[in-house]
Amino acid sequence: MERVRFAPSPTGPLHIGGLRTALFNYLYAKKHKGVFILRVEDTDQNRKVEGSEEYIHKSLEWCNIQPDEDPFKGGEYGPYRQNERKEIYAQYIKALLSNGKAYYAFDSNDELAIARTEAERLKGAFKYSADNRKEFRNSLSLSTDESEALIEKGDYVVRLKVEPNQDVVTCDLVRGVVRVNSNELEDKILMKKDGMPTYHFANVVDDHLMKITTVIRGEEWLPSLPIHQLLYDAFGWEEPQFMHLPLILNPSGKGKLSKRDGDKNGYPVFPMAWNESSGYKENGFIPEAHINYIAQLGWSLGEKEILSLKEMENTFDVKAIQKGGARFDYEKAKWVNQQHLAALSEGELINRYNPYFEELKEAVGEQLNAAVSLIKERLVLLSDIEKEADCFINDPVDYDAKSLKRIAKIDISKVGSLLKEGITDNEIEKLKDFMQKSGEENDIGLGAFMQVLRVAVVGSLSGPNLIPLLTVIGKDVTLRRLERLISVQS
Image (tube, rainbow, N blue to C red; front, side):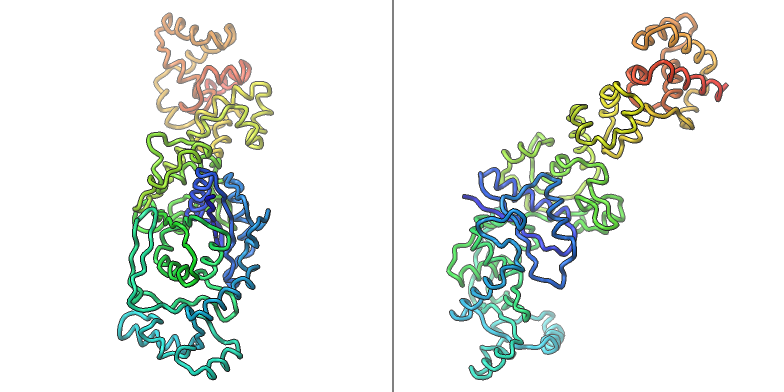
């Protein structure tokens, strides 16, 4: 059975890139009838941000990305927080030390800083490896007695022993074969001085023990793949499949999408609000639309761009994931949201987002569904509801200047009087027929009638379909608004 995991660090809010990683893991699991796991990688307690884990959980919940196993519902392979697995890591670090695949290092931060400065001066880069490990204080360069005395003090890290002059060959489902010579690799720290594992070590141990079959993560982790392969080899474990997703680029295509880009250009980069930053939810996106667009960042959906979560589960295909970066497009994200909103029935829209319609419901009563039907086709975001519903609720206070300019040549007093007569004497459904007949008799075009009526009722020349709008607000409201325009413009 396929088992995949999303393993965020609770060091802040969930970014679009992290959400896409979670989504692709989820889709892959569903496509293969497998298991999707949420694992919290919180080994770095100094960087842990209060409320971050809860935020990640709520964001996934809002997007309907439901883990099968996680820290909240548990599972057979828990604990699912790395901070609660310290004893497990201690057991496996001992195994690496005992078989000579890892070693103790006793260098102080100051000693390493000096060595790094000197190496950067001479070579341009510093690497703790087979080339220089004997120059440092570690269990490979010191005597057994010296090492044991320092181990007793507990002031050490544990490093992976990378053998020189070896080809490390791995395979990525997106990029194919990845080949690196071990001379390019560093003896990575596996266990820190506080006894907590680093990302590399905990990641491999947990993936093995949780029986992860495919690792799906961002391409920023691709350089770590050879180190992880060496760890699998050191333990004698079979490695999972790997899939590294392309970067999400900012709209210019020049650099990775960041919060700074969002702040500068006026779009969110988080699914939900975080501290002072609003999210897609607060900006009026609905979850199915948000993940539909996020899925398009690096995955080619084919001819049909608007898909439900279920449809994406059925059609997800690794072969359709691109290698190059995916450029973020906020306008496209809004368009996808518009399509999903349009596909909802009036009842679904009202039931799911009832608070948005409270004032409208009070104004139009039993005509709510009819009003929402007219509004719905004009919505891009849920946050547009208030603006689009205003013409059903309030009489125009100010008229749009450009619209007034457009109707300036029309005799508003005459047209208005004829409209008042037509509205009084006819059902709204017959009003258009009246305007055509009256227009012929008075040499007034239908457009003039419609424009004056629309400005009177809506306050501008844009708005919902006019005759159905009048049916909802009724004759009395229509006449009152028409009277006001005539008095203001006469």
